[in-house]
Amino acid sequence: MKNINNKHRKLLTTELILLVILIIFWIFLLKMSPYFFTATNIKNIFNQQAVVGILAIGQLFVILTGGIDLSVGEVLALSNISLALLTVNGCPVPLAIILVLLLASSIGFFNGFMVYKLRIPAFIVTLGTMSIALGATLLVSRGMDIFGLPSCFSGFMLKHILGLPGLTFVFLLVVIIGELILRHSVFARHIYAIGGSLKAARLSGVNIKAIICSVYTISGFLAGVGGVLQTCLLNMGVSSTGATYNLESIAAVIIGGASLFGGKGSAIGTFLGSMLMVTLYNGAVLMNINPFWQLVILGIVILVVVAIDQLRKGTMLYE
Amino acid sequence: MNNILLLEVKNLSKSFGGLRAVDNLSFKLYSGEVLSILGENGAGKSTLIKMISGALSPTKGEIFFENNLLSRLTPRYAQKIGVATIYQELALADNIDIPGNVFLGEEIAKKIAGFGVLNKKRMIEETEVLLDKIKAEFKDLLVTTGEISGGQRQAVAIARALRKSAKILIMDEPTASLAVNEVKKVRELIRELKKNGVGIILISHNIEDTFSVADRLLVMRNGRNVGERLISRTNENEVFALIMGITGE
Image (cartoon, rainbow over all chains, first blue to last red; front, side):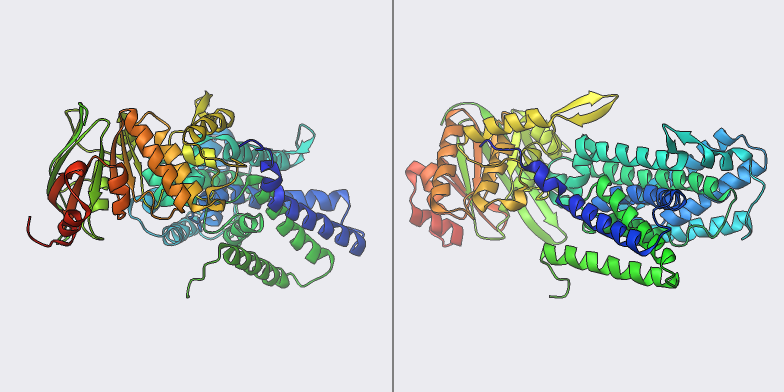
């Protein structure tokens, strides 16, 4: 009954495979384009990855319970617009950030509460809040972009924290905290239990309501953080900024080895998944591929990954 | 049959819509006693134990544990007072490793800044002790329960139920999916627990299980208690007759 050390070997497989794919991809791009391995381009990749990556970590918590959050992109947009409006109208920046994070977290909590309480499938609930958040964004901004933000937003983009660009620092912080929570906390153990077997979790006395509400709140909160960072990145409020983030955050999570059925996935995996996705975009630009192909390619990657997950699970929906 | 009254169920009923799954059923369980509950599929056995373990709330009736009335019983509270249940489907999360399943819902943790941090080392050690106690052997404890055999899963579920010193152990079809030598092991374990004063409720299709380990049996038909017998004063024919509802009682 000894010999308990081969856990690490197993834990790392998905992440290792991803890393290898990523490195192969990088070497390929390095050969194909002289611009790939330049400081500007690498910085671009990290900046692009930060916002979608943070959303993806929130999405991961939800997906681990077997749910999905389709509202993160629009909550991000609403946070971006609200932050721009508040600060342009004289609200102190720290207060504005706190208010925006509170708003985003409350939307997340609302999602979780509805999913648990009314037993409505998560994609319906979050589709509803997605529409509400989008409508609210357009209403408060009247569909227009908001300029003239305080200089601290664009200033943050030039800041370095511990030698890392500010945006990247925040992203890595979220990934590391996320990974620590998922690996070591009782909270995460219960998240995985719900995703693995809702019945087992319930019979074991896991507080399902608290966990479900928490994961959606985390997702909402991180969408708010994404909105704040997006404001720094754009230095303005853009009402249409959330459009592709829902799909991309889900894609990052499942490319990162998580199962859409719940119960399996890691923050490191999601980090690598989002990096692979952003590299894919970046590579397409560098190789002069029509940007519209990016969506097609991303869609194919998602279908392949989900198909592999489904086959591994060994169950077919229509059998 | 020795001594203390552990559990008393009085006039318990459970309806699902128009269906009466358990109908006005009463019985008692003493410490160090194995009570076997028999009955055909759909007789209401599983519904009955789910009420005792807190997974379902009764439509009517009362459950007393050590002479205290239990109202609004939840699975967590039942575990806390010492009512452990092993469900037929075992209730394991197959994406989590063995110690994780043994301690699911009751993890050993340290509080760090108000946050519960898993103490994996201690959970592994205590799982080893529990599995040793039931003489179950695993090469690797850190595999998920989705990767082990049916008998091993049963062992994990039993270790889980014994994690805290249970006063009552409810086992729903514990030998249903086991190989012969594993069945023997489970029966030995039941005798061992009985010696330690645990009151055991054994739900089984397997009349051999009943006659091999039980002290007393209760037969359910259509949700009702249709007869209780001491094992020493009955035989298989009589029990079959009760289960099938052949009169002559």
